[in-house]
Length: 265
Length: 185
Image (cartoon, rainbow over all chains, first blue to last red):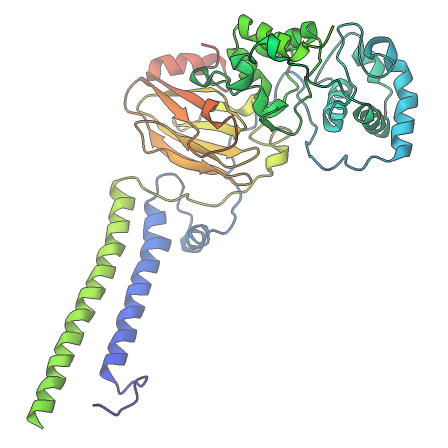
């Protein structure tokens, strides 16, 4: 048995092992950080240091591309968040109730419409806030709504949203006698790139920014789906609703709208 | 004494052999990775780029009017797309055949998958990061682009289409549009 120290340069095995390991490490590093990046077709090789930083995963700025094409229509500039509007105070709700006096003509005294304008009672706070913002910015337009939001401040919109979100919403009404939910609501049309309504609007799952639809007017829902499909309404973020509505058949639009609109007579 | 020396020689020989084999395996793996990278187009993301997923729709290269296919001055094209619960925007991407295509895509909410059938385009769209893939489609064809990373309850309804058209037809499209898609066609 050899008695010489293991980690010593006099130990031939140790020296060779260290040298070989270092060589392999150096070769691999050169290959991965320099040779491969320089052969990559999807980026210009701008120097060894840059190649090493990029390969090591440091955040780099995007290469200057062509100028961004701006839309010739207004799109929404609301940042969605499930938490920014949480914890509305009683003051906010009370202030919203006062401001809501001007809304009662169309949206009902307690947020439930008797015309075909949308019910707002119990609507998600983010939804009302976003729609008001969009009306004000012009991302969504409506002959009645547009002039009415012009003088609302950011705080007014938060208070209005808080008030309507606080009111009790219409509960879903789908008795067994009404038959099963339409396929478009429950399973969508996966073969036509349409996710089920219920995956964003509730029942199956909820996506922030999606509206509560139960008890909403069928006329209103159909009009909105058609407006999304044609692009006349375009305040949905990055076309998320236009993508869905575009593929829906008129029968599906009607079925979905009537399902959600169903309420006890 | 001689017996001891013999066993020391045998041990050294075995050590050398095992050493050679294991170093050989490591070198073979290193060169295999390099070979695949160079000859089979399996290259990692060239650089890490970040973007705020909450503001994609407000400013920057991923606003809706800038999505789709852009013709570049060097003859290649750049495709910009986003994945969100539960669709790709644009839903149909049009690209010219036999042309270098740079895809830049990201996610607005959760992790989505980005895969184009019959091609080596297969990546994830991670919120906060821009995925870049360079590819080339040899001939006109239509391909599916399913989201292949479970992204939520509506995942099965999330897919897009890729339409590869010939160069002349694409040039005609590019003559009067700056960003091209084949949505609703």
